[in-house]
Length: 401
Image (cartoon, rainbow, N blue to C red; front, side, top):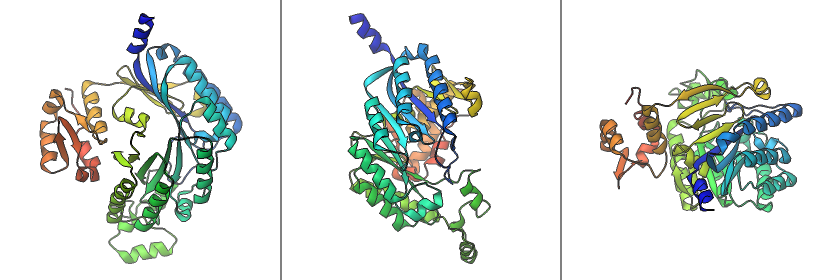
């Protein structure tokens, strides 16, 4: 008995990500690997997914899974029994902890009481609901398939089904969004008392309908135009302007203030949670916990190297999974440890190597009030978080250690 316990204790921690690339309708801002598909295609994909998981059984024996995350796309497009079946395959091939966090991303309009019952019986204990905005006009401009009222119905179903760990995704800096409408969204969502809120700023990704709508107009920020007359003319043509840079920054401050007043603490740049409700999958990613991804385009970090599945659906369904592999150097690992860890409120505990390699970078940003060091941990200040991309870029290493 003691030997068995010792062996289990020695298993390394692993997180699992399962990519479901299907959705009802592609949103105007979305550049994720996703899109609508026929039922037969979805069924074939589920079979291929189970096959890929099964092929990793030997690797699975060396690990203990702390978190499973179904992302997409919209995983809740699949039947409840299909999600349950994928999870059953994972349980057969991997060792899951008793308290493993199991999350499924869902969109309003794709949930039913029957589907949620499948989730509960399968052991799923966390749901992430994609809302983005509580304003119907903003939802239409994003190409979302639901209204605020339909989201409320989905949220009611989820609570009635017994789920007590719910995330709600929100998005600021949307076309036509004002500081007031964003604050209204935050207040309405916080009043629902979810356990977790993710609040991201819209990024216009090349190749999306929203990008095409705004490209070439003042570096993709149409309401930052200096020529207000031109902006007015564009608005008259039906182009709904984006919030300007100052308004977007104020929205960011409002997010922290409003959610903070409701008991949510920011544990990462864009994520807020009630105490003890931080997303384990997210924290593991920022701390570089090993992870195994399944499905098209899914990435993995295992045994010091990273590999990624191909992005084409038909080859994947035929059993052609991994196409790209990269062995991480010491410099890669150190860079990732710094720029991922600094995104979190806990920051990074500095080692002698970090102090030596990043001495000038750390001193520069501390002197500018962008970083702070306390009790051996390096953290972004509030001002540093405002320009975090610029600060974190300094921690990328382009040479070997």
